Amino acid sequence: MDQEITFEELGLAPEILDAVKAAGYETPSPIQAKAIPALLQGKNLLGTAQTGTGKTAAFALPLLSRIEFNARETSLLVLTPTRELSIQVAEAIQQYAMKLPKVHVVPVYGGQDISVQFKALKRSANIIVATPGRLIDHLKRGSISLDKVQAVVLDEADEMLDMGFMEDVETILSEIPENAQRALFSATMPKEVLEIIDEHLGEYSEARIEGKTTTVENIRQRFLLVKSHDKMEALARVIEGEDFDGMLIFVRTKQATSEVSERLEARGFNVAPLSGDLAQTLRERTINRLKMGKLDIVVATDVAARGIDVDRITHVVNYDIPYDTESYVHRIGRTGRAGRSGNAILFITPRERRLLKTIEKATRQPIEAMALPSAEQISTKRIANFQKKIQDKLTHADLSKFREILMKMTVELGSDIEEVAAAALCLAQEREPLFPKMEELSTPKVRDHGDSGKGGDFDTAERPRKERKEGANGVEEGYLRYYLAVGRRDHVSPRDIVGAIAGEADISSAIIGRIKLFDKFSTVELPDNTDQSVLDILSEMTIRGNDAKFRLMTDDAPPPKDRGFKGKKKFSKEKKPWSKEKPFRETHGDKPFRKTRRFGRV
Image 1 (tube, rainbow, N blue to C red):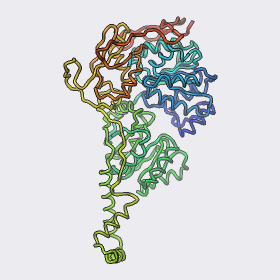
Image 2: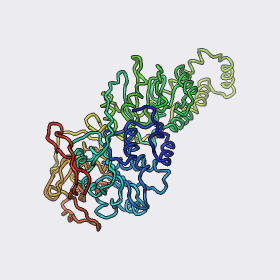
Image 3: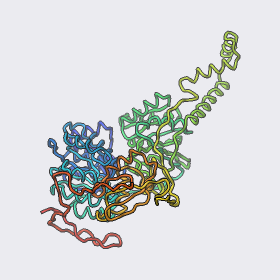
Image 4: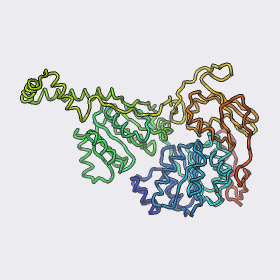
């Protein structure tokens, strides 16, 4: 990729380009540079890139630029595997569409009261970002129509199909108009994804970003899981809790360099911003101040930090996670130079947690979880720093006049010298208390993420798996059994159930207990301390398009199963005819694979 390419050169609509500039993005990521031109030309696209490479902007910016949105019609559909990703993508698209006031984005996902979604859909839904299961529910009820969709995007298709949504995805795609533009993004290409490509993508361009693996030596890598609104407070505590010489903090936008540095400066840190907006002379002056020790912390973007080589940088903090793993490697390479040891700290919000495994694979090193420094630890550091300042004054300052004042005060106040000195210390530390009272940040809990395969499991119910011990009712100790109104005749597998529960409620599959399949229903065991909010979400869950009617297993008869559509609209899952055939591939791995690719509906 040409490192100097800009968003202006990609041909985006002026309104979208204004939104990009307002967001402070400087240069497109590799996947954006490849995908945007193809989608702007109306081509179908197969995007192959890891999570966290900027895929949302890669498809949202060009589609917002070329689609003509009309009144209340749904013109763009984005399918995502989880509710968290649906919310994240919807928020990003709404930001990019800020200059398009008549364009509204509606996220549709399981776990939210469906009546809330009905109201949003009635007002306007030009763009729908949905999980497959909940979208199927709306299609059955007739609350969503896909007849006018001009473009459809499958985001993280491999994860979506791995969660058991293959049939739902095919059903949805069969309802999309034949002339609609199609885009599919996937980090890997398992058989299920290849089948979707074969059946539904048609002729396409490809944007492939190869993952690179790099060994990062001499750098201790850690991550901190923190909620978005607590990031600044967490950053301040990390800075105080770490022993560092020079620190480089990476953010994603130019505006963020100013915002973060100003808020840190207000807290008393010696910090300066570094972005592409700065003149070259000012940029060089900032780097020189860092080299000479006149500046301790620099907040920078990727572009502005290119070529920085400062030996005293002991810590690199990724305040905003980078677009791709290559950028991450470049960032943390600013520390641990010339054989020295370095430290890299990565801030991860719950929505970004899947990126951990991708980064670990790229660096070929584990990233260890770190705890937020406590008030006691910060107090210890502040006292040590205060003592160092006192020692410096004892060594170099002329204290004779201050001794006279101190002795005079002891007489006039009738207090001994220790009491007066203690009061002076108390007064001196008021701006930066030696014993700070800090609110506890409710950081999400972190499970061992080494074997999760998705960059980490973060749960509210942490419990190591032990040998199964059953109670008198046959349920594992510490678990409860729940009823699901789907079974073998619904073509449901344990994998479908695990994928639905983990995806809808955003919990780890590791805590899901034994699953039993029967012809007309199934049972699943979940920890008895599962939060009620999670159970409420699961009560609205669907599996393979069927209402799961999730409830606690009791001796009562299960509710009657309704298999009919609740809405007027009905649709068939039969494949529509396709008219052309084209060689695709002879084999897939070691297994035979279909030899034709069909596209172009009759």
